[in-house]
Image 1: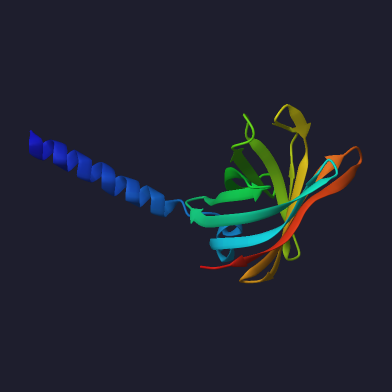
Image 2: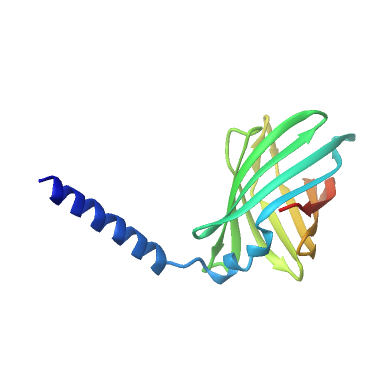
Length: 171
């Protein structure tokens, strides 16, 4: 009886490995491999006319069909964490991102495209501490070890700058 159970477990494990290998990530996701690693930077965060020092630490890793990001942004000494997954939506020919932040009770959903050497995402409306926001983030590749990250919030019909900083890859 024990041998049958062990054989069953071995067959399930082998099938899982086989299935995982038969579903490769889309090339649009594997093209993001250069983003893997740890990125850090410092700059200013501005919201509602107030500007404060901020730091960003970002760890990216390809994870199956997605690029997984684990980010900590510290603004005015207060850390905020965010976990996100970026995948490729073949039907719409765009990237989709689902972000879960420590400062919101609902996930942020974004849609984006590559525009030259920049990846640009725009969010659907999302709740941030009782306010409905629409954000746009742009990550522009300067080299394999340096990017410029820009965050903006929609203010009426215009985009207002919130953060712009250079991130450098450390590993």
